[in-house]
Structure formats: structure tokens, C-alpha cells
Image (tube, rainbow, N blue to C red; front, top):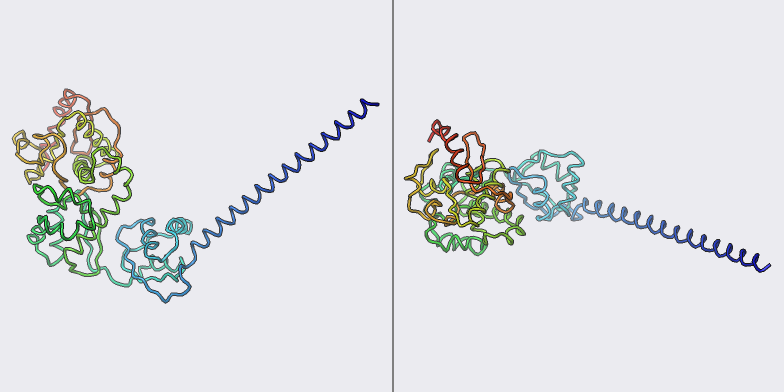
Length: 377
């Protein structure tokens, strides 16, 4: 009799445990369902809200400039900064989902009260507020002298007058140092020919005046440089070179030493290796800048030129950039390829050959140097 009661008690306890487990499982499942529904509801609300007009009416008008060559991401950032849309990331995904593209550069008059489709419609149709009067194309790797020549051709300014201002350290300091403190190191060294060399970002710039003044042009270019540098703020702060000036200096050399992104990263790796071993960089590009010449082959006599830009007769980086490098070259210096190579050789076809020893490098030079004989100076 006692054993039967014990079995009954055990069965009853097990049944209660099973009911408790089922109840817990149901509670957990219900909680998960609520969380999922809640998360989906929040996401739906967040996305929907982000796509709604910023303002209730279209009374306010904002002039927005979309530079030539702007990506969808960059356009979204501009629109968010100007208060035309709520969220640039949602904007980017929305136009991708809607397969909207071919946004046109120009100066637009938009309103925070406009719907997303109204905004994208204007950008696609090119319904601009002001016609772009001047497009200034600055290719990657252009020197200050090249940029001055381009500006002179496109405007009513004289090349000599532009270069005179570009050489004037006091002019650059008075006009730009407060807003762009990264110019400080370039301005401090009076041996630097052009303190803005390396800081005028290569891109296509649009202006609504046919003849903007030089300050307007330079301000736009420096602003673009600041935007690019901000993207790599974490890498810049941890870089062993120690300053924006030195990073742009190395990037300007990398710009001319290689064409492909992968090669640029590896060339940067070689330069870091040589700096770490206290070896001179021995870049022909720096010699040509010191000489003020453009030629396909550098002679031994050329490498003896007495200049703080010549990396043959001095160790370390030159005193400043030798051109205005692209984002690709800046990124290569900040995120280089880890390599054991100490030498590289660029062929006329764009191929870059990397070697670890001087003997290997000399073999490459002996094999391929004749290819440059047919290249135009």
C-alpha cells in the first residue's frame, strides 16, 4: 500500500514538472515571438520614418550642390547634412532597392518637405537650380604647377599670379590654416616650394560662376581633402609616420611609382621596410621633382642633385609631397601590404616587380631597363 502511494506521488510530481516545463517553454516562445515582432515593428517604423519628409511643408528651400562623380553614398551624406533627408544610409539602400541611379551633378533647390521620390526624381532629371558654369578637372597625381595651369586655362586668372599665391606661405597661412590645421607642418618648413602641394585633392569640381576667385577654388579642394582624411582618421592616428604631412608625402611618391591599387599597397610596404632599416628610399620620382623635369629615365648624375626632395642623397622622406595623391595612394600608405621586399622596379607596361635583395633588383634592372629607351621624355 505504501509503495503504491509513493508511485502515485512520483507520477503526480512528474506530471506537475511536465506542466511547468511546458509553461516555461510557452513563455519563452511567446517572449521570442514578441521580441521578433517588436524588432520587426521597430525596424519597419525606423525605416518608414527615415523615408518620410523631414518637414511638414515645402516652404523652406535649400540650395544643394551635388559635385560631379558623387557616389550614392556621398549624395546621401550631402542631403542629410543639408537637412533634406533623415538618414543617408536608409536613402542609399532605398535607391538601390528602387534601382534608381544616374543622378546628375549640379546645384539644386530642394526642400526638407519633399518626399524621397521627389528628391531622387529631381536628381535623375537634372532639374537644376543653377547651371554649372565651370567644371575643373584635376587628375590624380597633378602637381601644383599642373593645377595652376589648368585653372588659368579655365578662368581669367594668369598662371604666374596663381603660382605666386601658391608659393606665398603667409598667404596660405592667413587664408587656410585656422580651418585646415593639417597644413601646419607644411607651412613651417620654408624650404617647401608650394605649401599646398599634396593637399589639393584630385577630383572634378563644379562651380556656378564661370570665373570663381582662387580662394573659392582652393577652399573647395582643401575641403575635399579634409573629407577624405576624415574617412581614415583611425588609421592616421595610429600611423608610424606620425603626421598627415608625412602620410601625404609618402602617398605622393606611391602615386607615381605604381598604377594599380595592389601594387601601390606593396610599394608602400617597401618604403616602410626601407625607412625601418634606415635605408634611403631612392625614388626616381623625387629626383624628377627636385629637378623640375619630366623624363623616362633618371641618370646617375640626376640622382646627385642637391635638394631636400631628393631621396637618393638623404634618408627618410622628402620635406613634403611631390604631387597631389589620390585616395587610393593615401589608403595604400595607411593600409600597406606586409612584404619582405626592399626593392621594386616599374616597367613601362605598368607591371611592378618586387625583389628582396640588391642582387635580385639589379638582375631585374638589367633585364628590363632597355624598355624605357623607347619611351618619350
